[in-house]
Image 1 (tube, rainbow, N blue to C red):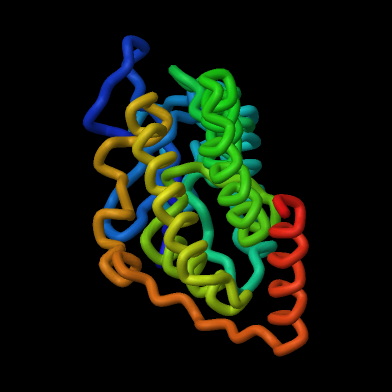
Image 2: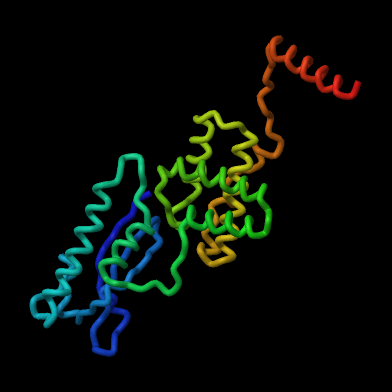
Length: 242
């Protein structure tokens, strides 16, 4: 999944001061995400090649310092990623928002954080059994994520499949995998309802749950010694009523 980043001048938008906004653009699979830097420039003062403003801009020093800082921090983020980990849009947005002091309209919760909310809600409703199911699913998901929370928008179909593969390698029973994946899906739907996730971002729609409709569990044989213990236990219980 290739992600490209670039600082551009939005010449199709003109601010009250006559300049154009400088934005940080993230491109992922032909989809663009633009983040405001809260800085602006005229076309004549903008250098598209270096993605900086010319020294002719009256505020060129603080603007270029900010733009350079954004480029350095995002480059370090990409460089620090393990080989088996994909870059996350949400993480890049956080870097830019932190550097520019951007304030989000409505803070959204991440997946593990929202799981905790759902667990608390179920407990207040006295649905303790269902809350326990959510706790077990959340704990397994957290282990798979190395206990690092993620934004909903950074989780895709590939993530869900890798979570499934991880459970299979851990020899987790098919019935447990079914419960975990369906619980994960339920939590995701609730997150959409509460506006923590965009409605059109629903990776479960392409995940095949049909394989879990009639899961076959492994038959487990008991030893002769275990059978004798069960028989003796049953006899002892019957003696209470004799």
